[in-house]
Amino acid sequence: MAPDRINRATGDASATIWQGFHHAWAYNHRLNRLGSYVRPCQPADGEREAIVGHTAASGTGGDVARFSEYVTHVEAAGVGFQEGCGETTVECPRAMTTAFRIQVDGLDLAPELVGKETYTVLLNGFDLGAQRHADKLIAFDLEVTDPTVYANGTKIRFSILGELCFDCRTAECQLWPITLEMERAERREEETNSPGPSPTEPPPKRGIRKRPAFEQGINWLKRQIARFTDLETVKQGIVGREEDRLRRRLFRLFGRQFFLRLLKWRIVTPYVLRVHYLIVAGDRDALRVSESDVIENSYTWDAETEIHREEVGSRPIAVEGEDPGRYALNTFGFQQLSLTTELDQDFGSRNPIQWGKGMHLLAWDVAVRSIETAEGRVTATLDLFYKSWSEAMNEVITLTTWGAVRSAGSATLRVRLALLQVSHAARGRQRRLPGQLYWPGGGLNARDDPRACFERPANGDRGADRGS
Image (cartoon, rainbow, N blue to C red; front, side):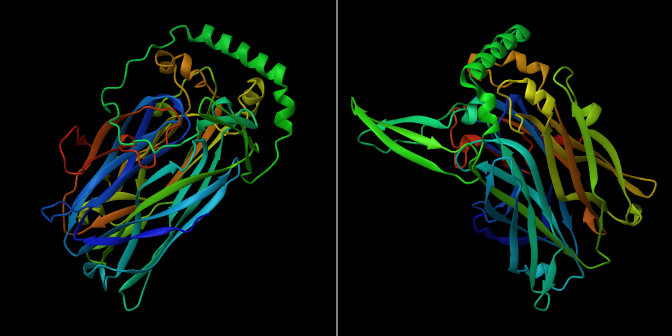
């Protein structure tokens, strides 16, 4: 794991709290880039404002991502806020869980946070992107620890830690242990700033209407590949944990140079993770913080019956703190979130080249919304949902994206929440900020591509509505 990088935090008397996201593709993909976050912005007029962002990029096939962020803006007397972010590169051997830690230490507290009695740190979002190639997400765990304030109340330390796990050994990832590469004999730097397609007007696609018959044909083709290449024997002989690539020059023809690259089956998959955080501080008469227990949602699905968030991925919750009637604002923030998926092994063994442990991602929802006070408690609706396939995929899958097939499996999602109760605050209302973007696919790197990022002001009115 590469060293982490900490960006200097900024303080203010108001803040926008990130309360999760909904994300869905039209059909399922590997994870090239995905994120949801709140970050500060310093406009030209000098007044800071919060920017709410969402990132999304698929692997091979182009697609439209539709999403929503949930946020609450808080202005509170006697409470200070400090925003920041940390970044690290996590090198994940395929199908092996890799731990990471971003250490925030020696961070100077903003003047409005110095000398307070209560401190807490919230996750204010994340942005996860493949450094080189996309893989299938198996596990994602992100947590912020309790802070320690020292140096006479002027400095703070805490850690952001978690785990990542990816795997991908189907055709679009690495079906063969060798690849043939070609490049111009005289390489020239190419322009990378060419304008891309409009995020709201993706090119039209022709879907495969008779999906069952098409899948039968594809599965027949897979079986022939498996039979003639003896893939079952290859599956049992996978070795190697570290990346090992050898490149041999073969020949030159018509101004092109040809190379043979040898690969190990299990290679290291580097992902860059940026985590946004929000420090909240106040005296006991101004701020009360109560942490929830870990809340979990687990379920299974098969390859025949589609699942929906309303049925398996949404539930009411209640967190007890002080009497909410004594506070002007009662709201939630995240301190931990995790996702673990598992491919049904019987399903994987029946599918000729659907092997490994990873599944394609169609939808991922983690959000706390519809926050209310009732009978001395603070209640909300908590969405914890992962989805691998849908019937609607039939309408958009084409001959070039046939690899997006159904998978049977299970998912476990967990969160830990912090209930913030503020005595003197402008009553903050939760907002849902929807959006969409188009990613062209083609295995393009999405780390610095603006087409993979959609940002808007937290207080903007474009498409926003009250949280629901």
